[in-house]
Amino acid sequence: MKTFKKTSLATLLSATTMLSAMSVAANEDPVKLGLMLPYSGTYTALGEAITNGLKLAIDQEGGQLGGRDVEYIELDSEADPSKAPQNMSRLVNGDNVDFVIGPVHSGVAMGMLRVAKQTGAITIIPNAGLGAATNELCMPNVFRTSFSMWQDSYPMGKVAYNQGHRKIVTITWDYAGGKEDLAGFEEAFTAEDGEIVQQILVPFPSTEFQSYLTQIASLEPDAVYTFFAGGGGVSFVRDYAAAGLNESIPLLGSGFLTEGNLEALGEAGEGVMTTLHYAETLENNANQSFVTAYENAYGETPDTYAVQGYDTGMMLAQALSVLGGDT
Image (cartoon, rainbow, N blue to C red; front, side):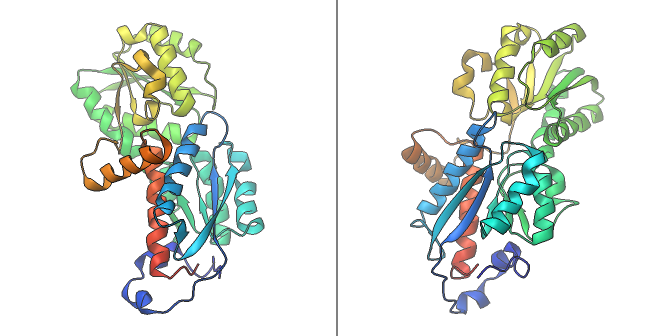
């Protein structure tokens, strides 16, 4: 039974002994998961990795959640904020999904949150790092299995200063997530008495960087800090190296710059320094088991996007196990 306006995932996750003792008859209909992720464009690889991680977690539960089969409804968000409310409404009101999972793009998240507030749809954010989603716009039916932009960018500000950099240029796409990422870095760096020489904003999702690289060279900063991800991250790092800037101006960034991109970057990625909230090399049993399972399932090493999808699946599995599959 679908009760968006009466039940939130908070209730599912906090309910323990009392609900475990209840005999809740599982609905024979499948649990419907609406995946609102990018399956085209510069963020395609991110959407695919999240989807793979999610499905791996559920496959490990026998392909079920709370004893019920699972139906996946995959909707390409196109990383387009203008389409977000309509797409979210389609999943909630048209497809009648039990849970909405997404997005990657923080601008898309803003549109989704409006619909989540109006409908009470249980929404899990497996990537978009917009801080407002779980701060000033926090609501009991919205959760994240990922990060905030500040979490990954702020630490690099102090690292950059301690490495002797005093004047830095920052560059990102002109959208909420990118600007919030730069703000975290700039907050930490200027607190250490560093100077931001110039902040450069590139129209999303453009990967035409040459004019901006020329501008950076003319400014002669001690280093460059950037946020780009997916195919855009690959293009920026390659173009940066091709312009010869990596030989004299160190490139710093949040880990999304290189995450999932190392093979594609090749030698261009050498020397790039980043900070991130996850590494597949973490030496604990849970992570090592996840990495092995993911490699066996998909023939490649998981990245942070994959683990965020996996954590989403594990969250759902635990919640619906407690509730006997009742949604």
